[in-house]
Amino acid sequence: MELLKYFRKLKWEFLFVVFLIVVNAGFLTLAGISSANALSAVAKFRANEFFMWVAVMGLAYIVYAIVNCLVNIEQARFSQNVDKLIRKDIATELSRSNYATFHKQTVSTYSSWLTNDITTINNFGIADFLMIVRQVFEIIFGMLTLAYFNFSLVITVVILTIIMGVVPNLFSKILSKKSLEYTHANERLVNTINDILNGFNTLFLANLPQTIIKKINKSSDDVKKHTVQYAKAAGVTQAITNGLAFISQVIILEQTGWLILHNLTPVGTISGAQFFAGTIFAELSGISFNWQEFKSVKPIIQKFKSGFDKKDNEQIFKNVELGNIKFNNISYKYSKNDKPLFQNLNLDFQLNNKYILVGDSAAGKSTILNLVAGLLRNNSGDIKMNDISYSAISDNDLHEKISYLQQDPYIFSASLKWNLTLGKNIPDAKINNVIHECGLEDMVAKLPNGLDTVLSDQGKQLSGGQKQRISFAREILRDKPIYLLDEATSALDKSASVKLEKAILSKKNTTVIMVTHHLREEIKQLANEVINLNEVKE
Ligand SMILES: Nc1ncnc2c1ncn2[C@@H]1O[C@H](COP(=O)(O)OP(=O)(O)OP(=O)(O)O)[C@@H](O)[C@H]1O
Image 1: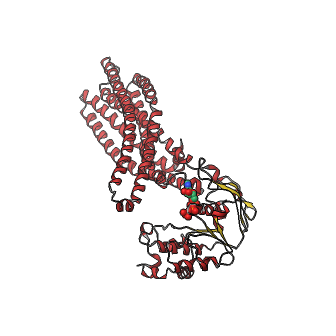
Image 2 (image 1 turned 45 degrees about the vertical axis):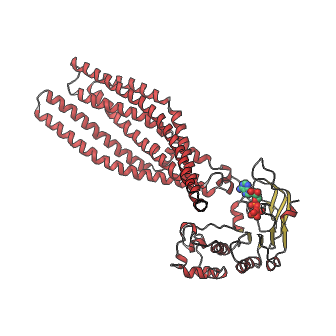
Image 3 (image 1 turned 135 degrees about the vertical axis):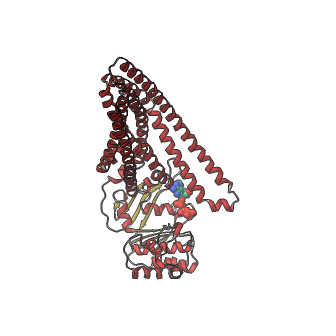
């Protein structure tokens, strides 16, 4: 089972929790034995013996309570460390994903994996497994004690145990299925919540605030439906196992009574048998239910794995030197049933030349930049850099050569400095030069902590133009030899646009492909070629 892999990684912590659980089960057993012995002593009017066993019982319960507290603390620590490892594994897969793999799922789905699903794994996986460990030891100790009273009791318990183990297994598949459906419903709820809340402004301006309630209500109903379905399946499983446990307890009680009446065991056994048979069957019914719940976690962890394409990491790539980028007979369509956006397109972007790409809206200009950046790779025909096919060039290699400035740059909820450097160590003097070059000085001066000011909520306090200036500064600091600009100055006024575009187009040893809807004369002059996509697509 996949979850056990994480337990093995944390084996010392796991063993410590198990040790505490075993000690705890030991003291509970001691309390049960003491109670039976106290009853036998009182039946024989042995006062000293009676009080001694009552004292032992009291002490055993006190230690049990203390160790139980320790178990809870250590179990919480262990669970959190398992969560951390699972999150790290998901984060590692995410960090290794290519563009297509990452975008197979929505960001909200990943959020749900990292939050809701981890909570489910905690409740159904880790807590249930440790509960099973506790139950197994309480059963073992209980059986040993029953054997000490009278061995025939153990035989009956074993027979009843086998019956109790078989019946609930019949429900295992249903529980797993329902648990997976429940996690998918949670993903849909998180997706809806994110989508609707991100669209708050649009709905507010359209006077449609009720839509927020309607959409969230609909998804809540979806989660409710699947939670109730899971509870029904779990409830039936639990009811059957509980019913079997009660019947089994009655059988053991009858057998003990018969043994006492025939002088085959002391009177105290009645209390011991009741205590231990109660414990054993309650724990057995718990075990079979917890085991089903524990197994229901498996498809959740498998879902994480199957979300990522293993082939991404196994390909062998060549290191490519900078050179011309050529499109040879490129055709592209976003989905199988679509008409191709363009067919047999041939383009030649010469090293260090500057290109401006124009064309109608939706002609496919951004798609071409995405193909050059290697974000989209499922094209037909061959894209080559320096005569090496893109299929042999890694994303890493491409990103080391390309700066891609988009219309709506992402601003992290981090300091301005972090947003510019993306966490890299760059001297302040260099940062300040670029700030000056990108016209960000006024903005930085007004920020309360200058470069260290945290831009909260994805830079909501910034204007579109300020975000675009930050994006220019970020990419100039990355200092790569190929620039792709996709309407990267659309939110800036004419003079600011011209200044920034000029800064990029005037770079000497740099290839530039710039998409724009506002081709200004002074910018056109800096280009080696203006490509009209409407014409070259024909
Ligand atoms: N991720 C996507 N999935 C499906 N279709 C897409 C996707 N991205 C773009 N398209 C479609 O591909 C076509 C070309 O889009 P693209 O963004 O490349 O055009 P564009 O020329 O850059 O447009 P604009 O000038 O309006 O920005 C459009 O019809 C668009 O709907």
